[in-house]
Length: 129
Figure 1 (cartoon, one colour):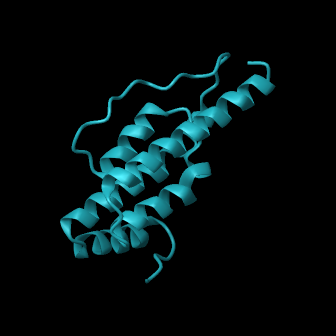
Figure 2 (spheres, rainbow, N blue to C red):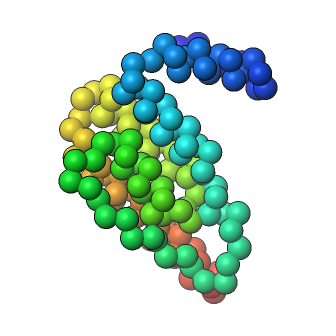
């Protein structure tokens, strides 16, 4: 795999070339992952006096793994995405590269986000929030 060097216009051009070379399903995966990376840490930037609650977002019947990551990121907007990056990437890879069924991967993603939310709540309690 070729590494994108630098930032700015050269990095953007290289990323666009990679994007254009992908199949449509892989493009969706790349976009979802990019959104995930862009949103990580958003919860830490928000100052509040009480722990934030997840926004209720029901799980659709026929949901893709990419759709689940987007849904869970919206639902658990207060979480630090960088703390979940490795696990989320591993689950996405298990689905895309190893062919694990979407429903099983989505169940694990939901458990992952719920576990991180429980840790968030515990941290808030320790802070006296």
